[in-house]
Image (cartoon, rainbow, N blue to C red; front, side):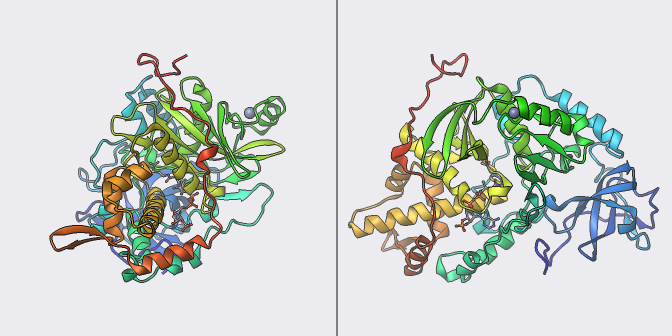
Length: 498
Ligand code: ACO
Ligand code: ZN
């Protein structure tokens, strides 16, 4: 089985019988399912868009059992016209926007989509597309209830960042570690099963427009990196027609033209994110930035990050958010590594709205630092926090790893000191919402019911695994280095109270 491919049921197209017959490059249309060559094999693929490129007609395909990140434009020669295509059912599979048939139409839709964005949406609408109540991500996994949609290719991060000048592809694999936890009895869940499940979970997007299903930027030059976006991001129309766009890694302004970009770089005076540095150690710094005070920078950040975040729509109304931006310093300045955004006031008690490690830094422990930082802030605030739902596939993996690790460490320490623990005490010590604690304990099979009582037990295998894990030289945030007081906002402005 090649990476990202499932031996399983088809996932493209609606679950109803379709008419089948031969098509030609001229009759093949949006919504059709055809056999398209990918990685040397013919695979079912849904045509999401069609454009006339200089080299000829191209079809944007979403492949069966492949993560949405691997959608791509294909030329006519990769489509097997010898085989029948499945035609869209007039009502059931009607493409949501028929105009997305040509590149021009895609572009004009883009304008429409941009225009549809009211100047100020309600903050909830901005930060997450759907209000749909999602089961707890972990329960969802454990109960195995989720319907497979587009599977996750856990290797797909590999090809998404290369150093400018054609450096080697980054090796983001972590086979050893994944190999550590194979047997289900070792901790209640198996890594293999988990990854398989996430493959079938895939994209979390709930954005119904066809437009947002199509990646619109091909390549981004960002500092010394070439980045290959995963998802649609609403950059202005002319940018989507370029093979490569240029983003200043400090002010995050974007340029379609190399000359203008070079001119800008000579003039740009920013060398760190435009906020207060609230944390520094010998590895990373954190800056706090108010969306209202640094609107342009934060909007630029959101636009940039949307290319790697499937299901969040925060890009216009940044005022209600604070941004915690993690950087690494060189003689050139503070380079953006990752960030999380946080609502100034979250009715649901979320301590993270969006979280992202830039692709070139992923799988190196930075996500863990971001997550730990978010909980350290919650500890200082004296609140319990949780990330905004739904979590993405990678978000879920990272949070589960963090939750398991910190809960296990706390329980091992408490048992050494013979202290009593409860879900509430764990929750308070770690500033984690009790629901996340509960689900982590359940997933790790640490809760037992004995003689009419719920008890917490730590399976030996988990202790052994944690000990092994500790041998890896992981980085942690040193809480005592955080120089931060919870900001106070005036109700009217939701900005700094001074
Ligand atoms: N495959 C398997 N496990 C993974 C993967 C992966 N591709 N990525 C992360 N993990 C797990 C691992 O258990 C890892 O720990 P380990 O390396 O000790 O095994 C753990 O997550 C943490 O990994 P980090 O290297 O610390 O995380 P990273 O820097 O890669 O950042 C993040 C994680 C932020 C989720 C990153 O993948 C990302 O930016 N993804 C795209 C954006 C996204 O999906 N964000 C979350 C959206 S949900 C929300 O915003 C609330
Ligand atoms: Zn700049």
